[in-house]
Image 1 (cartoon, rainbow over the protein chains, first blue to last red):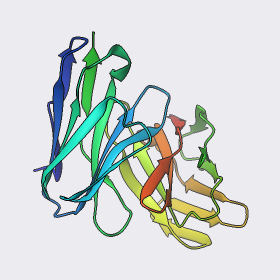
Image 2: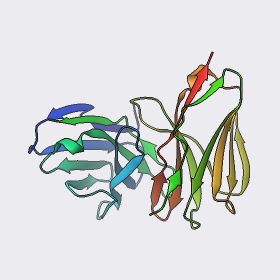
Image 3: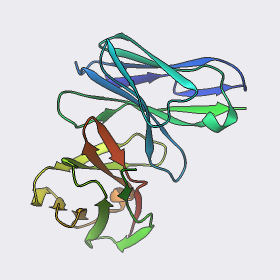
Image 4: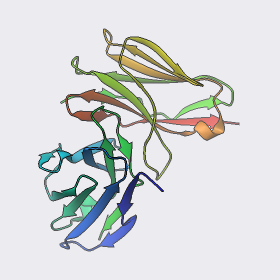
Length: 111
Length: 109
């Protein structure tokens, strides 16, 4: 079984809808991250969490919110989806060290 | 803005050759450096990390770090068609990893 899982793997939604992307991990890591990737661009950090009570904004948090339900679960919500949020979204985890391990990604299309 | 710069490529090398991928970074406080490989539509997977100046070898891969020049590179020896992918350089400063946009590598048979 994969150490970091994301659901759904693909999602099509309409402008204005609220959607949630979920991430779960079995690595026992405290730190979890959400990134987005657009074609030809690098990974951009949306939010990160160092433990259940510690959630921080990344470089592109506008239009997104997160919830850390447990050590193993970190969800990303788009409050009111817009077309320029169409992207590939990755969840990642790390322990006290810096090496990050990525989930398989969620491909999101906002119409 | 903490910049991590990579040539976007594509870098084309023949099978069996050495591929050299380069990355420069702007923040002198950077502490750790990572190379990830990403196949199209897939998630990044860690190849190597390096913390200290010099070379670090792992199989066909060698990472090189020069903090004075703010430069990190990845060498792939005996390149194989399966090495064709985008290679992401990531630089750690504080809590975050800053990623470059990646270099596309094409290994031709």
